[in-house]
Amino acid sequence: MLKPKFGFYFKNMAGNSFGELFKLTTFGESHGRALGGIIDGCPAGLELDLEKIQLDLNRRKPGQSAIVTQRKEPDSVEIYSGTFEGKTTGTPIGFAIHNTNQKSKDYSHIKDSYRPSHADYVYDQKYGFRDYRGGGRSSARETASRVVAGAIAKQLLSDVKFNAFVSQVGEIELEVPYNKLDFTKIESNPVRCPDPKTAADMEEYIRQIKKQGDTIGGVITGVIQNVPVGLGEPVFDKLHARLGAAMLSINAVKGFEYGSGFSGVLMKGSEHNDAFNSDGTTTTNRSGGVQGGISNGMDIYFKVAFKPVATVLQSYETINKEGEKITTQGKGRHDPCVVPRAVPIVEAMSALVLADFWLLSRGNKK
Image (cartoon, rainbow, N blue to C red; front, top):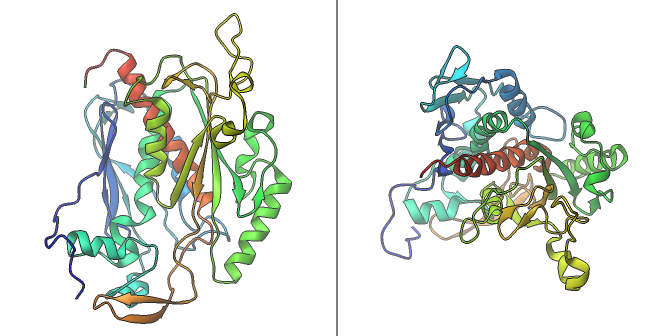
């Protein structure tokens, strides 16, 4: 059997919590009894709209269209603590989402082997043990808990608008600038692209990829509007740095850029600078709503790059636990392109970051 290079295993899994003041800790595995979380730090007196929470979960759940995984899960959230008479009490909010449609036998063929570009190998090397059913804790199904917490964070920041949409699938890219789009059209198609023609092209392409038993990557653009000035800290806790860390914690994410991003390197400083209006707003927004790590009141906009889903329904070469080369076949129910279902996850992580900084701005102590 392949041995860990350090000669020992780290038995416990750390890093299950996100945030400082508005803090989410998640639990559960893809094929376990349930997923869920505990939100610590949500202020008392917030009236929760449970229908809005469930709506965001429905946008993320599997089986919602022909271009996503066909696993059928209701993804109904149950809140067990932290609320009374429809309002938050200021105590930890505990919630769970029960799994009902596991097909663990679909993963029996990888019990003793490693899927390329998955967490299988590194989990075995780090912990000496792994839940191979659907990837266990490494499954993107964990993000359902993030969506619940993010939906609550959105309600806490009721004046802030969070929108995300698919702006690229493979080589098909939305050319319309975000400030020229009608965000009400995001949910009008299964791809979640607000431009109908581009959405139709993306959907057809995903269908073709799915027929081939293959997968494709894409880009989600996030836009946060009505952000108050002053969120973020100027050194290690820059607002854009925390947003980047939040996005890069999402399964399959390979890149993050905000504002002008990499295209800014093509410009001179005189072209790139955002000139001020007399009220403190700027004539352009190449800064992406953040200057010196602190929000300046302009729209925060960013892009998140997602790799192709690693599980392809084709035969492939890999290694088993003995280090032997083997050939196996991808099985199970998987997304041919993850970005349509990842849109509410991007929104949720954005809301968690801003809720944390908003509470800090109110003078709360860590």
